[in-house]
Image 1: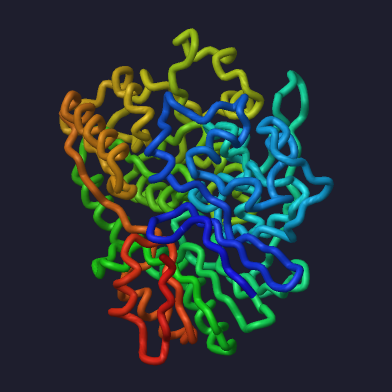
Image 2: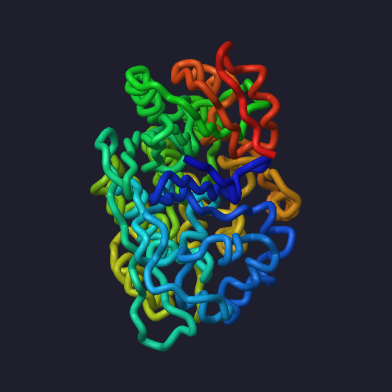
Length: 464
């Protein structure tokens, strides 16, 4: 059995871990490393679609095809003049969750390679393809062959639903998936039974969220197993402070209950736990939660899988952003899913929110802040930032722009958030409950700090 780390080492995200055992070749996630990507590309400087994977390979953002023969899509290989294979040489990809730092570059994998993930993750990636601002390097659920031809249908990947606790085979390997708590629903960890012992892949996880019991249930199951190697995320290995979803709710409730004007909330689009939190706060404060069109679409598509209110609930409004003609007319919302939502009775344009500020919480992301020009928040309105703080230079620039917008509209900045990742205290509990013989830190900038929390008898194997 051999592990090769193409990403996720000494950095946060970008997990690309190849497990090989006899004739079986299996990837654990295949995500985008945002920090490395940001060194060369940004919003207006992107990899060239017409050059396939070549730009990303050249800049070291994807493994070279000669290192992974039989892995990439044949159209991507053909564009880059790389050798073409008849059939894939890999048995599968275990996808832990839908965040792009774990999933995005699956978009370049041969579509015949099975991708194993939770039903929730698969449904979310499908919805994101329809309503998200995706580029050719994040066509995870399905893709169009390049060069793209008008009217050509998307090609769907070989998706395989992994059910928590139910073992399945990938090649000659047996895999047992576990549902865990994270800031996006449907997250999973995996236990892999290899010829040289068991390998546990944590993915991203926590215990302080609304669904923290899922992680705790996994630990009880793993008490019955002997884990030889643990690949453990350590995003917050250097932190001990924790906020819980309950604290997010109570702190936000306190701010909103004292506000007699508009409340603007910004939380991650995929964080449906946070959506539920603000939905409950809206009800408790006799307000309505106005959500974006794409929020409504994602909620509608996942409602049958997780506990979510209907998008036609009396406490929900669907915000119509100003497009094209600027008149909020039906033709401005020209995609089919937009038309379906536009026809609902609970849609509301910005100019109507202006008249009803005391009764509404509106979700606006950083990219929607120009809507404030139409909404015209009244004096005394509040802004709640409920997502992670900036962790790189590009995000810091956006944070500065955000504060410029808030200053212009005299909106106070309230930071209320809980992380999707376990802190050092939780990691210690998780590791010492699993009791692996060896541990390899991944998804962290401080692997050395694991020495401070692991129990005796656990050997740390750091990857350089």
